[in-house]
Length: 161
Length: 115
Image 1 (cartoon, each protein chain N blue to C red):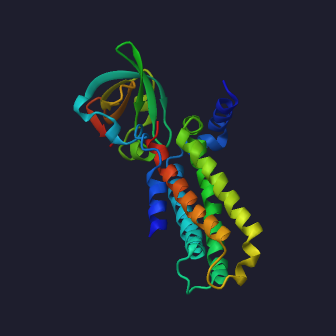
Image 2: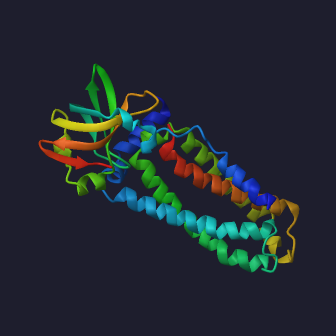
Image 3: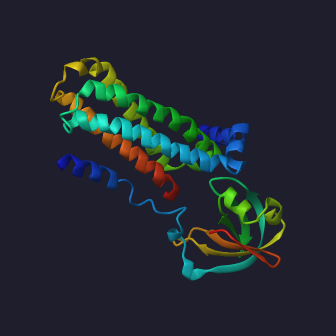
């Protein structure tokens, strides 16, 4: 048994795992709230990303980001516990799913991209009247592509082998 | 628009080879299996119940329905517990994996639809 398998078995047999798998409504409710979190995350940060990438140039960058980034963060805060709940219901299948592994990898890259943007460029946002610098535009396009790919992979877990 | 095309391409190029497990499309409805069986183990759990059984000398995985659906249709864990005789109508995987997805369970004279 590999470390991953024993981790999955431990999660499955924990009280959290048993609650997530066997309580009839826990899984569908977690699934629904996970989708709400996704809508908030992509709907929030996606608009900021499109503005940074070059669309909607009539809208000021910094206030738009101040309004929508907290929505995206709330979405992420909803995604993590609901995702953990669905993982706990079926861990032995998920640890071996290549699609699930790709999803986690892309989440890691997307979060790193977002943190790098905040640390490297976030404070200069006030100064970007029309066109953000090329680095910001690249990160913004990357952000949209990454989060949409994460969302698509999430849906595809159910159809993967 | 090239940006949107790029994004669309990025999303659409995700694993196209993946269609395998949960959709009904991966099971062959033209080869309906209609048997009486006894499960050797049952998992009454989400995202869907599952069981194992011996059939024609081989171990088969049996895919049931989400817990809330099974309960809503009147199926209980006791009805399909290991050792109970259960009527099954289901379809095998197209790719030859020994796994069937169950359309309905027949307990005595009562048919319970799982789709």
